[in-house]
Length: 96
Image 1 (tube, one colour):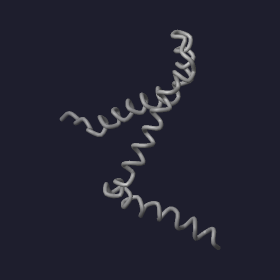
Image 2: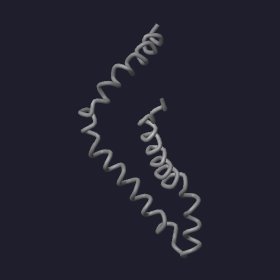
Image 3: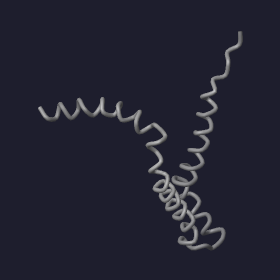
Image 4: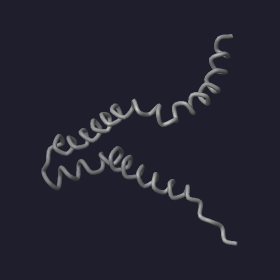
């Protein structure tokens, strides 16, 4: 019998591609292509960096707007117990 493909690997691949594009190009790649865009097109640093700045402000705005909906998704409730089990012994050890 042939082994079945684990569906989770599709999710891992999709998240990897998303992270590579958003982190790699949007965050770490800026230093690589800003100078090239300035040289090729004669654009100022402000003209090249303004859309990147807007991207980060937009992300912060979306995060602020949807942040209040996060507790309804369940992760805050499920993480609360786990983080408490890690933090509580540390807190108790420091108080002795």
